[in-house]
Amino acid sequence: MNDFYIALGANLLSGTASPTASVRAALARLQQPDIRVERVSALYRTPCFPAGAGPDYVNAAAHVTSVLDPHAVLARLHEIEADFGRERKERWASRTLDLDLIACGARILPDRETYDRWRCMPLSDQKTSSPSQLILPHPRVQDRAFVLVPLRDIAADWVHPVLDRSITDMCNALSPGKLGEIVLIEH
Image 1 (cartoon, rainbow, N blue to C red):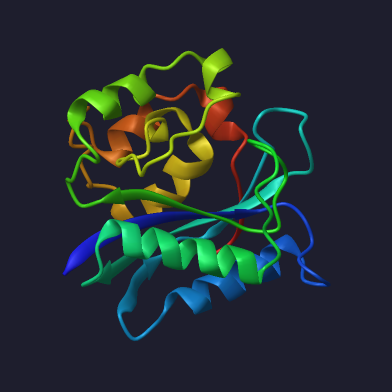
Image 2: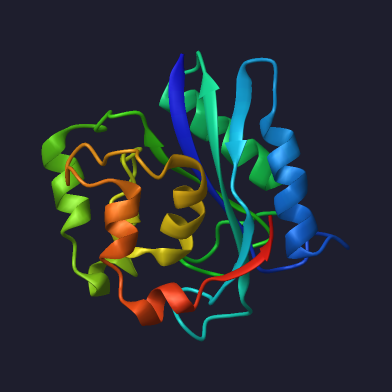
């Protein structure tokens, strides 16, 4: 079995469903015959990223296990997103649903050199470039409070295989201002 960590977010209506309802429904959809939901975080309200690009998000995280490989799990996440009306037109645009595969255990994909190139990419290039292949762990998980805070609920001790820091350590390294932007909605 493989351990996967998934970040969930929404900031637009999906049909008539609110972002909170969409995140809850997506969490239910993650449970499948070959994917088992192990733990789910609380729901949080977080500022849109990048700042000012749209309404606040509802974010959560899930730990799932599966016999599937990371590419198959990512394909399932994309299917669920599409069912909620997700369209991939613009990088970092507002979304009806966003399901990001953050990590698969301690795997580094596709290789360390590619991972390092994406992790160290300047923000200006990140805005216009997206990888053509799966990069794990997510190259900027360590910078994103809206991912780290929900992950801390379910995987506080997970250690980043490149940075050798736990989720808790990465959260503690964020500025108090960034952490203060993450507001608990419900457990």
